[in-house]
Image 1 (cartoon, rainbow, N blue to C red):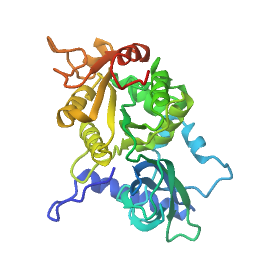
Image 2 (image 1 turned 90 degrees about the vertical axis):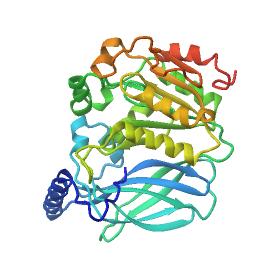
Image 3 (image 1 turned 180 degrees about the vertical axis):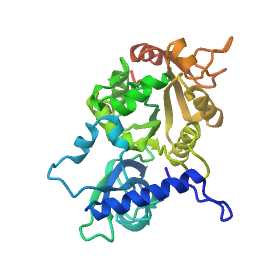
Length: 356
C-alpha cells in the first residue's frame, strides 16, 4: 500500500504528477462545499508487541445520520467505490496497545504503519483508535487488528478472485462488469469454498486467515461484506492501490502478492501456512516461489482449477507435461480441484490440515 520514496534525483512519473494535481483540484472544490476528511479503516494484524495499522484518509460529505456507514458503502454498485478523493499528507493520531503516535498519510491518503505496543496485546481481535488531526470536528474511527501470538501454529493465506468468489477475472469484459457495474450483493461464492474454510477454522480455532488479492483498496468494504455474507472466517484483507506510482503507471500485482507473502512469513515465523489460490493467473508460480524460499513454512498448496479456456484467456497457456496445478515438482503437498468439496477430500489425506 505504501508508496516507496523515490531517490532524490528521481523525478516522479508523469502519471503520478497528473493524478496528484487532479486530486488537489478536486479536493479544493469539495472542501469549499463543506466536505471534510474522514477515515476509512482496514483490518490490520500483528503480534503481542507490534502491529500493522491500515487506513485511508478520504474526503467525505458532512456526517450523515445513518449509523452504519460501512454497510451503506458496501451495498453500492462497484464503480461508486472508485469515486473517492484522498487527503494526502494529513496528520493522524494512532492509539493502540497503550502506545500513541502521530503519523502522516501518504500522497494517496493511505496510512500504513508498523508500531510497537506498550502493553502486550492478547491473541485474537484487538483494535486501534485513529483520529484525523487539525480539524474542527476531528473524525475518529477504530481499526481492527488480528493478533497472532507464539502459540499459533497454523494459518491460511487465500486469494480472493475466483478462489473464494466467482468473479471471472480471466475474462476482461465480464471482470469489468463484476467490478464496476454489478451490485456487490450479487457476487457468488465458489461452490464448497466457504464450507472448506469454516472446517479449517473449526479444526484450528486460533488460526489466522488472510485474504490476499490484487484488487483495489476501494473495494475493501464490498469484499468484507461478501466474506461475512457467506460466513467465511474473518481475516485481514491485503489489497493494493490501482493508481499510478512515483515510478510508473500501475503497480505489479504479482509483486504485491510476493511482498505480502514474505511480510507474513517474517512477522509470524512460528506459523505454518496453507496457501490457497487458483490457476487463472499467477498464484501457482507465486506459491511455488514461496515454497522454494520457505519449504518448512508451508503445510500445503491448494489450487482451485479454472477451465482450460479461462486459463488461456488469462494468459496462462497450457504447457506440455506440466502438472495441472502449475507447480513443477512441488516440495510440499499440492492439491488441485474445481470446487471446495473436491479440495476438501484431497486435503483430508494430508496430515495436519484437519485435526481428525
